[in-house]
Image (cartoon, rainbow, N blue to C red; front, side, top):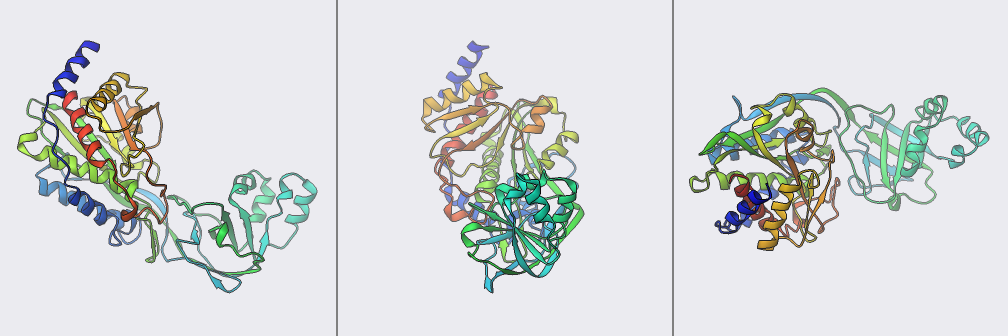
Length: 423
């Protein structure tokens, strides 16, 4: 096997390198996917549906065929949505949604005024302190506590947990950035997350408004297409990327998701464009799958492996593309320690062409859409770039701050690697 990979590497070294990227098109795609029209590619303003339609249209323009009867593979799941932009005043001072505070993804609806009740952290160490604190009337209170105390609260006895739900609103103070996620269920009370730096000293009263609803069967869709192979059309190489992100909170707040994962979706579309050209037709068929609901727990990829559009054992190799907008510090390959021969081939190609400063490897990890395939025995890598931006799961992950430092080099490495796998 070692001799085979040496031969493949030599063949690849003399192959024509993929042409330089049209970075104008790359920027246009990322700008489009992160625009207010797509509203965070999530669950209000039809963000995920608009993004899926955009990807389908790009596939059609390139002449790619749908993997199934349609480009779309539909499924449903429950999601809690913050349907209006939340409001919060502290001591009469209006805080800025998206910058100073957010509603927690799982927040319930609520509106009103409440007096501040700061958590006494002695409740974690003293039963006497706990009994004294929980003897208070919570019904008109805004319970305020630090993010690091959230988990400790959840471990308190059930009678205390029930008392916590009597508060009108919970306010969690975050020491760093305001991050969010996707929730399938709703909390018992409204929950607002506030940056500690924005919380005024001596806060005594809050006015708040949160409007949220659970959609028990939100319909979304994977988008899948392929280019037929010239020599072995029943063998597939697969590129995947999740196009969804976190959506928004009402019309005024949305999470652009430039690095996560407009960058990977753009790379997927660039690869589709490359392999759609007759002069680049692959020997194996190549499938391009844009997954929905990755941020909700890899739901799109789990649904796909349970309902594959062609047999999973026909996949020669799968490469998942997520967080590809940087590269200053190189590239990480999840499953690099699992598929050592393919990783050795990849690093040899990089060393020859000097694409990236380093390629690091990790073992198995359930952190993106490669994972459900790996669990089914499909050989797969997950690529993500390193360095360059700290914006993640917040309102600051917008297109203009994304450096795209090594985007062309990652593209060339991917096409070289794909060529070698087909030898």
